Amino acid sequence: MKGWKWKPDNLKTAAGLMAVLAVLAWCFCWAAPVRADEANITAGLDPASFSVDQAAQLTVQVTGSSSAEPELPEVAGLRFFPHGRSSRMQWINGSYSSSVSYLYMVQADRAGTYVIPPIKVTVDGKVLQTAPITCTVRPAAPAAIPPGAGQGGGIMAPGGQTRLRSGESEKIGFMRIILKKKTAYTGEVVPMTIKAYFRQGIQATINSEPHITGESFVLQHRAEKPRQTEEIVNGIPYSVLTWNDSIAGVKAGKFSLEVDLGATLLVRQQIVHPSGMFGSPFFNDAFLNSFFGGGYKEKRVKLVGPKQSLTIVDLPEKGRPANFGGAIGTFSLLVSVKPTTAKVGDPLTLKMVVTGTGNFDRVDPPVFPAGGGWKTYTPSSEFKDLGNGRGRKKFEQAIVPTSSNLRAVPPVSFTYFDPGAKQYVTLKSDAIALHLQGGNPTAAVATPAQPPPARPAPGKKKTGTTAGKTKPAAMTAAAGLAPLETDLGVLSRRIIPTYKKPWFIGLTGCSLLLLATGWFLRLRRQRLLADPSILQRRDLDRKLKHHYREMEQALAAGDSDRFLQSCRAAIQDRLGLAWQQEARAITLAALQERLAAGSPLITVFQQAEHGSYVGVRMDQEEMRRTLDLVRKELEKVS
Image (cartoon, rainbow, N blue to C red):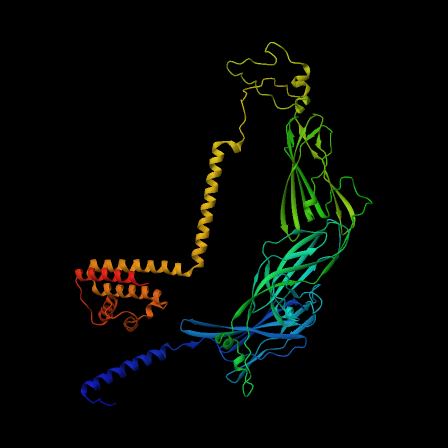
């Protein structure tokens, strides 16, 4: 090396460096990681059983090599699609191991049992292979075939939305509507599945819930959030949103229905470049298109599913019980009474629970037999959705025994129509034993004891019957009716409506004032958000206050360097907004070029730059004058 001489000092330095390198090499050799495992390959399929319209994930894990890729065999009837890869590294007690997992989506062309032969990989000249994998493919569910061109399931665009070209529905997205049955009775709940398919790689925003279009149908149930899954259709992976709903027909006939869904797609804009001399597709690369201006644009679309038909028939008149209320489905009945030991006239609580699958909106309370020494009240009801179309409806009814001869609570009955058996079914509970402990039957039907008569107002005469006179027999409690109250009580001169009372008028006025204030603040906030210059000015004021506060603190502490750096930052922020430039990109040369010669801001900025290298000492009086000068000059900047 030029300028280097062989001196004793240099020799000592070289020897020291060699010793350090030797120690580092010895440590590295001893601490070098040792692979915990030799090269290996494993494979797994999840799930091992799937349908034709679904897909399974094949995971091939290669341990001990990060560059060797597995060789997939060809299996008649199965198709493999690469779905990505992931790496994993471990360092445990000085032992190092790494593995790479290769992911593939597997789809079958037809149902049957398939055997995936061993998957091979070559690592360092050695061929490794997995064990064979057996999978079962089930037939597709109804309506699993994707809608073809001209059969619905495309994308339409009413009212200003973009109409996609023919064939784009299969590329971007489509809808499916799956009915559990094609024929139902009037009022019967028919489970329905709605699926929206969006091709993976396209960002979609759902603008509304699926809308059912059809005559004489009522939507019975709507799930709050759709279930998100992934499916492969015709070799193309899709993101799928699934809603589980139910509908019911309101009149007989054959009707069609369809479903639509509004969405906004974020579609990449492709830039078409002329082919080069050799037809190279270099400029058709997606990354280069985005870099050279090929971005994304929003496209509002409406996905429309293929039309489905549903036949609605009337319930049979033959064999219809008189107490049938319109419940259709399959149900069970559970009845209980509390307490079972009481006195005549004590109220009992009759609980009736109807559980099953069907139109619970038409499930009426079970019929309690009228008369027979019982007084009944209107029952209350409570419904709970159990999922998968099942539900539970609870009824509670107050019943009062009016005769001491009663020995049991009579059975109650509930009637429904079973669409599977196509017949009416009447459920009847068992009689429940009851123990009554005497009591006065007459008191059972009497109303609660009447309160004592109100005292007359001072200075007023009491009207009606006097205390010395007896009331007619028809007005006594023995007749089962409360006696008439002839005392008029305290009379009011006039009734003032609520809307004319001062407190109501004042409360209404305050509410209107608060509403107007909130509306004004909302409009003001929208105006501020719509004008970026106002927000930029506010941000600048906040920064300048911070810089001035830093200057004051540096002045009090006598820190010249901190004071000058705060001055420099304040000048950059103020001129950055005025010149529409990045604040930290403003230099001394820019100030000298754009400001008038001899501007105090140039002098202060130059002192700040010199101070960052050589240091500039300023006393407190000089810093005070500089602070006032900077504040004054920055206020002049427009």
